[in-house]
Image 1 (spheres, rainbow, N blue to C red):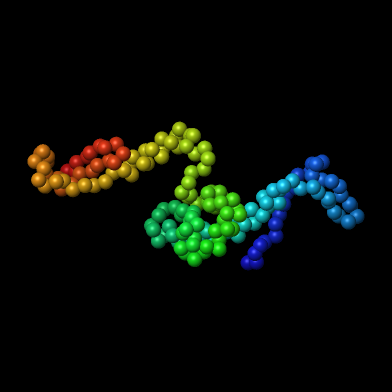
Image 2 (cartoon, helix red, strand yellow):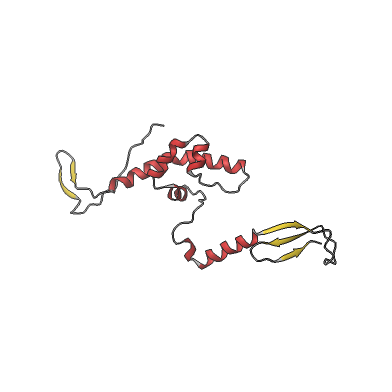
Length: 164
């Protein structure tokens, strides 16, 4: 497909913006506020980036056996030979915003994410659950009455669980 596709802009029909119109010529004269056209251009960039970034994220997720695709960061794009996409992602609002727009998991959490108590509880629970490591038992330690070959230690809570 050809880039860029046509831009679509929604212009509010208000007195400060619409200066006048000529019916015979089918013209509308406008005084656009700064940044209004950037909104339409952002949408064009995201639609251009959508298939590329989703395909890259899906291939990476498959390779790393991840359940959900992750928005690639600038270093990853450069490593894969897609460094030319970095300024386009930046122009479309940045890696966090584009990742959210495309439904890809992002490494950074959006503003306000940690303000929700249920979200905070879920994240802490996941952190604690992922903090378990399996360690070998010291064969010279006589304090253990059992004879397991290993035990589990939680690095967050310092809890110990023995294998049976």
